[in-house]
Amino acid sequence: MHWILLFVAGLCEVWWAVGLKYSEGFSKLVPSVITVIGMIASFYFLSLALKELPLGTAYAIWTGIGTVGTVILGVILFKEPVDVMRILCITLIIAGIIGLRLVSTH
Image: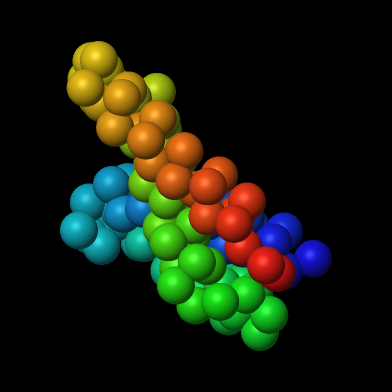
């Protein structure tokens, strides 16, 4: 269950990171409110996951999910560039996330 909570926390991190772009420096009210809700949700689910999971592992996976999801949505929503090096780096982050999960004793 705690791994699911961590995954949800990571998805919420993607939510608020993308929301930051739409809020335009918190100058737009609705995107800003949606962003803050995403931040609160992300930290809330992370805090629940941390009741059982090791801090270092959970934090690395949380930020990794956020990083990968934000890059993917950046490409889809904001037409950010895609090149071989970006794909390689994202692949390494995904491998790190999977590796940390596999070696975790929880």
